[in-house]
Length: 316
Image 1 (cartoon, rainbow, N blue to C red):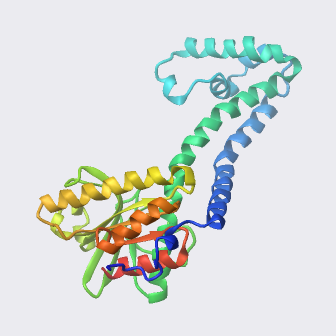
Image 2 (image 1 turned 60 degrees about the vertical axis):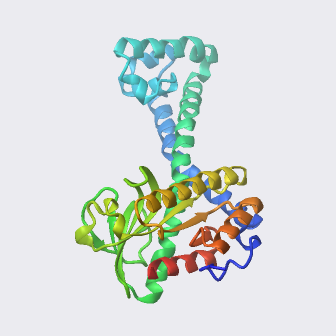
Image 3 (image 1 turned 180 degrees about the vertical axis):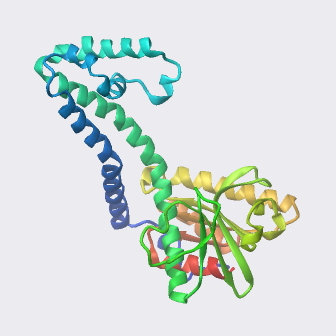
């Protein structure tokens, strides 16, 4: 048996509990409210700006609310690049004639509801992306915590910057917008890159660990000889999508192992972290840990497993 995580004692120990699933859904609901709040505030601002109008047609004479009405009419930001001013005005008139006028005195509310309905799709899209980001942030926070306990120094570079800086692991929100981390262990310097395209695999990989210093960070993904470990991170908490996430992640990990074996590096390590782990996939993950196919794994919602995984990662 080759299991590096002492808190994984059986397949059952990998399964996400009902309590953690519930907590995950509540966390997403809170985040969804936060993401959607600016649109609600926009709607309230529109109501105040349109309050002095008497009829739905009067809205056409308010250029300051035109962008709001364009959205309420169902036009996306992408569609606007294909439509001229006349096309946009036509869409607003259609909105007024077919939906706002029939609402009578409630035309302002009707415009507000339609705006929020359209923006609801935007919130849904943002949340689909945000769920993955939240999973990565939770993982990074666990790395910071492990390093802080050890008294280790860690540097990071953000997705929107090219400059490295030493992080304060006790500072809230330092886990946001992180592109890569750097630290030194007893074996040398390490660079951990997130969600990066690996040329040998020709795909993006969630977790990419290399033997490298900051000076060699640029282009490090092209140096197969410095690759230590690659991992898949699935932050979605919905049990309904768990098996599909594992299939996707498992296929990606197989592709990594096959690609690096062909490139002459058959001993590349691989790992899997998932928030929603169900019984059937837990059995598969545990079996791969036993036979050494997977080097390590963790349930993202199990703090003991996650910290043990981070300690293993830090020391690689």
